[in-house]
Length: 73
Image (cartoon, rainbow, N blue to C red):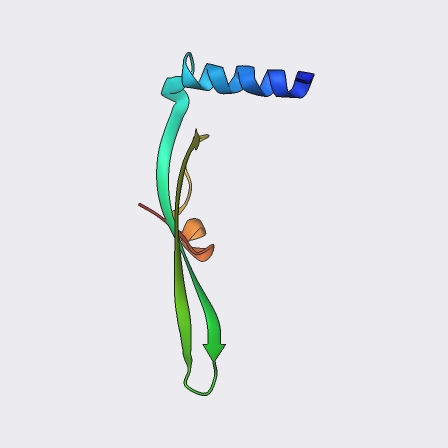
């Protein structure tokens, strides 16, 4: 195991134990539109759900998130 792997493992352990109160879990849904048919003016809507955890560094604008096609739940 290299130095980078050791440091990464130590940081992950810290966020699981000592810094657990700084971590927030989230669930999101990304909606994308594909296969545009100009003749019928239709598209296929694809929804991708994902979740994770991370450290929040303040707030974000809901409008900024929506322009990226990511809706937080």
